[in-house]
Image 1 (tube, one colour):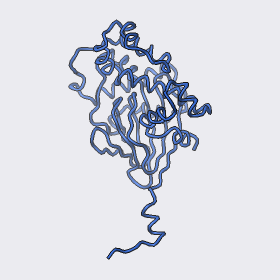
Image 2 (cartoon, one colour):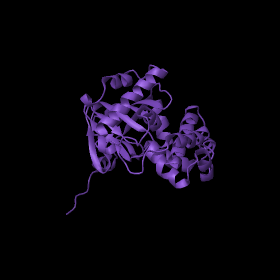
Image 3 (tube, one colour):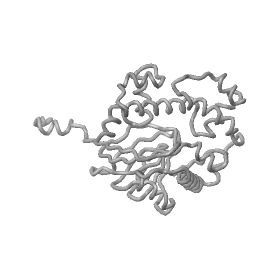
Image 4 (cartoon, one colour):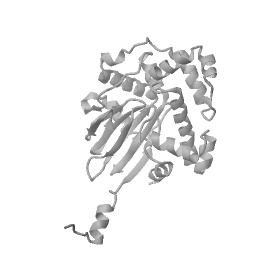
Length: 284
């Protein structure tokens, strides 16, 4: 015989687990963003971004699914995520977790390595001894500005870490080295005004490459497709507009999205939070 639960006990069974997100941005530099997060419960839905994400867990246990496996990142451990790789994020215990993270433009890594395919780190969790101590200092002092020389030093340390943890085999991919200078002209054209939808013919004209070579080599050089790169730059415009207090619909249209719902879908896909959740976490 089934037993009926009292109302209080039933509500406890039906109540979703408590979640809390607090985000705070530090001072960045061109191509580098620094973020601090404190999270309890289910933190981020599955999402992906077009930057390298290099973070360190400072408190609690961070857990995330990456390339089909559930990973755990303990205090002091780092995680190195490749651009455009899907992942989620949650607390491994009821106490939640906190971390700080660097989001780094793959083009900077390209420049630091002198071209060639981007390093790919298959096992994303790295022990503290596997990272340069100065990177931890860079995150601990995230409210201090990064001048141009410090920016270069940070990128060089990140590039060296990515290459070291990727292994030599991961650096050799078929198709030869990408035409980075030509591809950079496409990238700059998109970034100059991401609200404008460019044609493939424009990309061919500015780069001197055919569309098939462009499609193959852009991802090899920068870790994502031209379409995805444009979407992320549109979302950069949206985030800046929201922080100025621009209404969601207006921010979406100004950034070149078809409508607010389209922007919201892309936003959650990129950051794991809706625009409203992101703003609430930012203000907490």
